[in-house]
Image 1 (cartoon, rainbow, N blue to C red):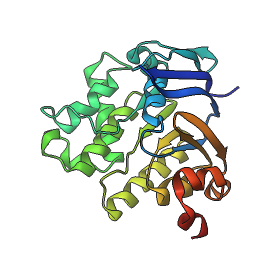
Image 2 (image 1 turned 30 degrees about the horizontal axis):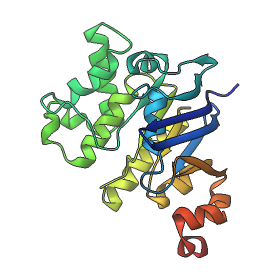
Image 3 (image 1 turned 90 degrees about the horizontal axis):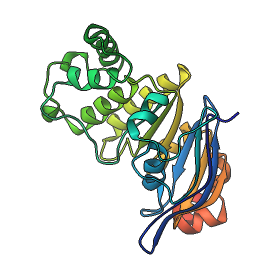
Length: 241
C-alpha cells in the first residue's frame, strides 16, 4: 500500500485549471521529485495534499486513510509536514521556540518539546543559534529552521517546496547533506525543486507537471531525456549535457 496516493485530483481558480486529474503514488521510504515550469501547479498540488486548499475533484489518501480537504493541523497530526516556497518562520521567536512549536503538534509537555527541539537544532547545525530571534537569521538558516520545525512534528512524509531556492552552492550542498541524513533515517521525501543538480541526483523518481497536468513520471535518467519534459521545461542543452 502506498504511503501517499492521489486519485484524479483537480483544482481550479476561476477559469485557471491549476491541477487537472492528477494521479500519483509515493511509497514509504521513497524520495520523489516534483518538477515543472513556473505556474505548472506544483505548489498548488502541495497545498491540496497538506490541506491548505480543498481540491475541486479527486481524493488524497495517506497511510490508507482518506485525508481529502481535512484541515492542515489534522493532516500534520496524521504524519505529513511541509515547508513553504517563501520561507515562513515566527520572526519574533527564537530558533528554539520555533522548533518547539512543531514539537507541540505531538505533545503538550513543554519539557519534552524543548528536549526534542534541542536535539533537532543539534542535528540541523543550529544549536549555537537556539536563542537567536528567527528574524536575525540568514535565509539559509531560516530555511533550515523551517525544516527542523517540520521535523519536530515527527512526520512520515516531509514535503519540501523549493528548499534550495536562494542558497549559495555551499549552502545548497549543506542542505543536500541534511536531506541525505533524513533519508538514512527512513523519512519519505516529496520535493519541489528547480535546481536540477539537486533534485536529479537525490530523487529515486521524478514527476513532471506542465499547465497543471502530469506529463511524465520515471527515473531521473529517463526524465532527463523525455521529449515532452525537454520541450516543456529542461531544454535541449540539459538533455545533451
